[in-house]
Length: 405
Image (cartoon, rainbow, N blue to C red; front, side, top):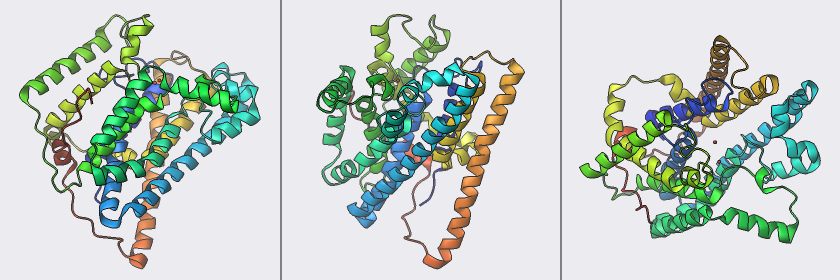
């Protein structure tokens, strides 16, 4: 299937922003949530869901539900193995180094594991205990395991029921659904993992974003898919909202905390629960991207290094975790531990490492494809897809609005 280089480049950009955000340097705060009160994580999850919907719905249409389900499970297994390898690196390499040099930042990060090493290892491999920074892939795995049934239902019966259900779960997540389920689980099972050690992301809140991307991607393979044309008033409103969020974020009094120390009001923009005003900001940016993105892309040069990083997004994501954990082990989490030139050298080294991983993975995949193609032949000849720019411009109209890094 043809790859959309534009989407790969966007995913590469999200990986760059996540890396800069997670590395403790002087750029961490200025480049955190650079477009408003929306982070790279939202863009990465939405793009991943869109690509999943695009690719796996094609399998569902051409080969049936069972092959589509197996493809989802195969991908979920690959992500799980990546998560497990990263966990082992954290526990047996980074933690050992940090204990030897008494690095407080890492000791705080793995405090539950240090207090309960056997439980920490077992429950982390069960994706229940999720140390900070390693809590994104478990959520992604859960979404991938759930997606085959959701996709099959959506392809057969339409997506209205799916989006209504995910919207309802998002609303409940704002009022403590995850905490309620955790309390019941602890009552009946005696689960020893504290709630705060089970990942910062509220899964039921982010599920709405995943299903939205899945629906949008699957809709591209529908025979009656129609181009999306936003009315001028909605584009204008989106521009006002996005600009307001951008100015508020970078020139407001409180930076990334929109309401300063007011915890209740900050929940409206909360990243981990995917707060309502955060969704509004994200929707505004999405409308502008669909409306103006294709024209901008046509005028920009191709950033092939971003494309390569986006094409190998899973290995590059894990490589970024390796880099961040290594820096935390040796330098701690201070953003001013090095001079400016030290931060510059660190960023060059880290992004050189990420690009090297992407290059090696793509080179290996290319060699594997060259070897297997003459023997097995192509699996199928997919129907040509439009360019990513035109795909973006033809996205279906999103559901109505009513419908934690």
